[in-house]
Amino acid sequence: TLVRWLEKIFPNIQTVYQDDFFKPEKEIPIDPVTKLNNWDCPEAVDFNEFTKVLHQLRTTGTLPSTFQSKENDDNNNNDNNDDNHNHNNHNHHNHHNDDDDDDEWNILLVDGFLLYVDQDVINELDTKLFVNASYDTLKTRRENRSVYVTIEGFWVDPPNYFDDIVWPNYAKANKHILDKLEKGNEKIENLNSDTIKIDDLTILESDHPTMISKNVEKVVMMILDHIVNKKK
Image (cartoon, rainbow, N blue to C red; front, side, top):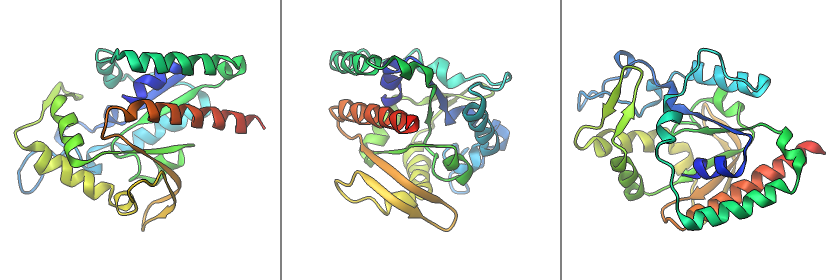
């Protein structure tokens, strides 16, 4: 994934996964139609705790002592070793190391499917990215990873869970973004809804595997530019 390649390029990067902030299973909303647990709606996420952890990381550079990531452990077992990506990673890594001062910076990545539905979370993000994908792409990705770690143990998607739960909730939660998307546009500025305000949102397309290298390169440059601008 994009996050994994950025972690390889920047040695001083730390990633927080929104999936680590699901509520206990007994508090997950029940879909009124299917009667299934709805893990893909905003109400399934503990945004108060999510924001608290992000704020502490931004202000102190450390995680709460009680925090333990289940998602990080799971993802570490699924690294991709594609040769082309390794080649790009090598080039970017050399670029990064040209400036040893960059090692003084701690870079925080925040990965999640509902990052732009809570203003307190948005306010903790310096640079905002939206990885756009089609229905078919998202369905394939979801079906390739149908087992999820929860507080209590594991969750396995029931049959038709993507069509009945995942996709409708994705479209609803991100409607304020999806409605603004136009083919080929790379940025949305001044995105305002009734409850959400996003000044600058960069769009990354991800339907084709070849887009991964392009997206990695773009985000690396955005991070380096942000560091340079902060030094001014």
